Length: 246
Length: 54
Image (tube, each protein chain N blue to C red):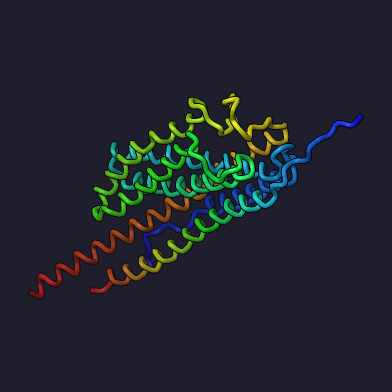
């Protein structure tokens, strides 16, 4: 049977395995290599993947903004697929970031949640991008959906630097991992070389996870586009038959 | 004279919950990609069959 969908590339299969191996290695480093933090205890280990998930979330939203600009300039459908893929992956990883942060905060700040600038801006960012999906869901016309999505992804990106710099520009209890933070931050710790190596390796691993998921999601988006195209031509053909019959 | 050192806080349960969320959410997303892919493949096959019909 003839199908327009490309078979899975060998490079993607290799990337799948490399990413899985990296995730196993990063998990092993977190549990077996990095020491237990002297004050916070085992919950500090969540930090490695918590920050890495936030990194992927922001990277994915950034990519969606770039894809939005590319779509508006070229009108090529692929950029719409890239933008949607970025937003979807970004939402998943920012959700991981927010929920794990809340779990870490319970024993360290003695609360699940507080309306600290970082937590507030991260939540707003998540909601901004959740609304992107709703906006797309409201538009039936693919071109209009792509155009609105592109503009929204570009405007929505404002929330990303706002979230990133919120702990550097405002008084906050959220720790700053890289660079000096507010001295009143609670839960700050100095990273030992082993902790730093684990942290950097986790960032690398999550970057690989992002690229792998993005590739898969773009392939899925292309497939969805092809199905939508065929449905529209089938509906048009059906409409034509009705006209001829009447 | 001995220096009294406090042991780290007992936060093992929170750590387990954190990693359950990380791996759980990633797994759910992965499964959603697989399920959507299968469903679209089925639709595509059906639509291509329809397209072939005279």
